[in-house]
Image (cartoon, rainbow, N blue to C red; front, side):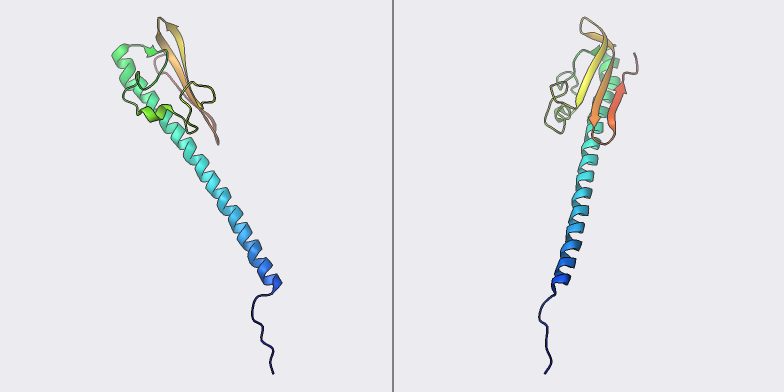
Length: 131
């Protein structure tokens, strides 16, 4: 009479659990990295949209830069882009977006710095062309 084994040994089950655990760690690490890159790219896109609207639309029409920016000032920019991925409006406490005008007189400025604090790369900065 032969003895028949029905099932897995404890070693086999532990091995499968370890492999599954390592695969899960790798998956969630890569998922997190992809989400960070996506947020950084979203922030760069928003800064670029504001920058090009300031340089190609606002400045040529007015010959100066505004002291503050929002969807009323930069009408060519999607209003959602003024809100960072954390839900904070540009230049509000905790926002990763900042607009810093320079050399302002009577709400008319000669330059600016437009920044986003990225998670992977530090600051992404665009400066005015005409300062």
